[in-house]
Figure 1 (cartoon, rainbow over the protein chains, first blue to last red):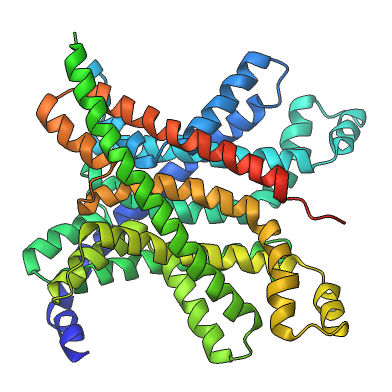
Figure 2: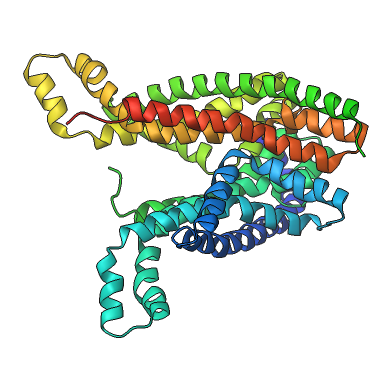
Length: 220
Length: 219
């Protein structure tokens, strides 16, 4: 046990700044990707309720495809595959885009479930008392949808945060890639990857706890 | 333009990888379902507080740390202290152990959703506690958990793609080595996406069939 812990004491001064910086990168990547996936997801969910059948079909196909194709395949396609047809992203942009595209499908399903849970009377009443359709959506329906979806959205954020580790495989220097570089430098892979795990845990766990607090029917 | 022989070569490589992907998915699914069910039974019905705390801790650790980090600890970390796992063993063990935490929660949600009267009635008509759990509660809880277990299976199939990072020879691993030999990045990664979709769609369909056949509890 002492032999396991000793390296942490010896190297704390060098490792902490590296890991903290990488945590920042992971957090920035996850938050940007999640914000983008919220926007995409809401748009997709709204498209699913339109009268245009073709649009509805297209969105349904997108959601199924995003459920069936691994994130890693999406990231590799964006970062390594698209330059072959002349579209080039830097690694960080490709990672944000890939995460957002993959998680938008999940977010869309959550919003859709939320939209279906709001009784039609809410919108009708809003229209009847003189709200415009736009106002009745943004002021009456949407806040209620957000309220219902907030706990599952936080769960989704935690899985996005974890999946952001795959960005290391397309050379984004977030926690895992930083860990790999450190592991080759110090020859202490066990201690370093455990430290990386702890870093993720420190970010993810508060959100996991929060999602359970906010869940409408707390699982007992 | 791409010659048809290149295309065949790529397809062959990817299909070889697909075999390994299917094996890793099935074995780690089996491992995680059996482990997860065991954990759920203990967490739900055993009276030991210490055991509960340990299982909760295990689930939190598994669920709040990325699979990739777990795999690196198992494969690179343990090797450095002389405990060397093959990449396939590390892949299956890693995904199985993470999945156990996930399925434990899903099974528990199934048990928790059953009305209390089920257990009370079974005990009242003379079932022993273990008969009550295994013969009365478990079959119903399984049915309730079926949809979420199905989602988990699809997720697991996709998650096997990351075991390429510890050199398990599945689809992504072959894709990466094919890229270095043929440089057809766009073609190869598009084919990879289509291949995963071709594996996932039948799985989703099978789950839907299972759900309609067994998923509904008779009132």
